[in-house]
Length: 328
Image: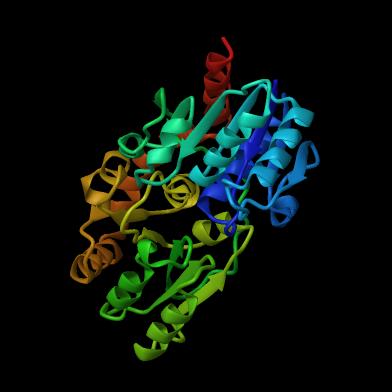
């Protein structure tokens, strides 16, 4: 099967990682093309055919759409898989210049309704919660998966180590997490792994609360599994999610993971590992975990038994089935 994946690059975050992992795994048995910004090249393996395209162009510009149509005709894919609504409009509008109408499948990564998503022949929600916002002609759910990587052990710290993983943006709730940790009565080290537009704001907050020795904005890393594995506690502080890759990574690598009570967090983690989205609730739950660590570690061991549900192999198998269903 020839599969054309498209990605409107913003920065390397959750959607980009899902797309890259999917391309790399699919390329083991299929011919895969990835149409996106050249910044992605260092993340894909040699078997993925990279095609440079700037999706910032006007999606209604006929000259740009004609160029896209010619690229698609040259690749001659069996299926087009988009990961963003803007790409969907471009791929759909490019059909005007093409003889062959290639089926389009779109992944809905975030719980946000986009009317134009209805242009897709099939929509894939990454969780049952995001399926509410997936309004294609036909809609299914495929949970995100990740490739397993061995974690490397760091030098042991003498402080209680906490990790947060995600884009530095208000929706990820890191400002609430930092405020909450300023109120706990035990020594700790918080590593926040990720990049984003809120970096300066978070740096200012850390300085204001005099937490420079306790909170570090690590930036983007390729070995996120090592930071999770070497922490005593992973916290997901988001205000909204589709199906968080950080949560899946936590199920694979964390000793204990707790999360805000949003999306499908309670369904996946159980009521004892989720908490309300407020500073007070953060403080209460973090102190509970710290003071009853063995109890929470045992609770989370049971959750980790679900990790096979989030393997990259299972995700790819389900996507291939979806592709084939559109080719019948």
